[in-house]
Length: 404
Ligand code: HGY
Ligand code: MN
Ligand code: MN
Image 1 (cartoon, protein in one colour):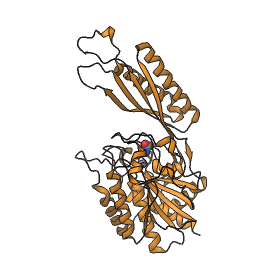
Image 2 (image 1 turned 90 degrees about the vertical axis):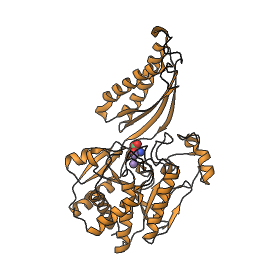
Image 3 (image 1 turned 60 degrees about the horizontal axis):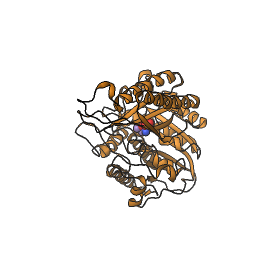
Image 4 (image 1 turned 30 degrees about the vertical axis):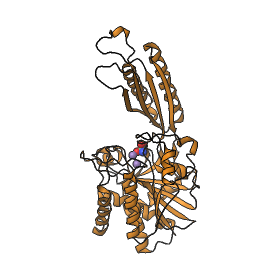
């Protein structure tokens, strides 16, 4: 779709306002949830809303809202402003930029329905091992007892962080929404490889995350005979490859499994690793497959550790079910894209999003835009300004349809 230069220019201005926050010499960004860099992102967001003439509000868990504060019938365009470690500048941010662009068009054209943009805290599991904390708490998809004890990478509990910020782990449920919409980069290759401008999400894969702690015996790496070792790292290595095999076995059901965290103690060259902590991320849309792989991973840990004389402990960090987007919203977005002449296709999301939290509250939909080579959670992440404008236009066209 062709866009007026003013739209491309405004999109670029918004992108540049967030650009430097959490910047690393690597070229990536680190903006972990409930840290000062995420705070900076929210401050910029609130300021940008003010420049459009809108008030802003923070809720009881630090989520920031800009736009109409109508108590009923409001359409919420949401996403997040935190990132993974050494991540890209489009994951989440593209959705907030699209929301601000929609707010601007709505104000210029007098859209007769209330629209608000929401930046939800700590969408990434990178800091606490649990995702969508900001949106999960205010939609009651997450509760105090699930998250209070979660510990950040810096060793702080979420409870102590909330207390120091005056936030509440029991916030009032978000209400008065007629719909929730989110634009997000696809974080996969489907749109780019098929040459499609936007994706209309049907289902969001359910993420499950857990840790497995392996304990052998730290001993001298030179003086300990190979046959007499309890090497936790070798047990971990065997388990990691077994998890990959199980993921490949379940791939037919669109289930995936990743070991993204490996912490070894004491992590020095001349000591046999005594303890290893694995962080495991499993996603899928088929509950039977998800249950099966979770059981088989735990069974593999038990078997490998028994054979290697290694103790182990497993800890479930979080579990969210697969979530379907509203069929009516999918249809509405598809028709909006058609009216604009923007190519679209229905698709699933392997990545989790704040949108997971909303289908029990209101009509919920997601629009994907392509990102370069499908790369995300990586400093090389890239999406074009024109793609962000494509997705924003489809959302705005959908809202104009909802307003009649
Ligand atoms: O990890 C995810 O699925 C998302 O990027 N938070
Ligand atoms: Mn992400
Ligand atoms: Mn994201």
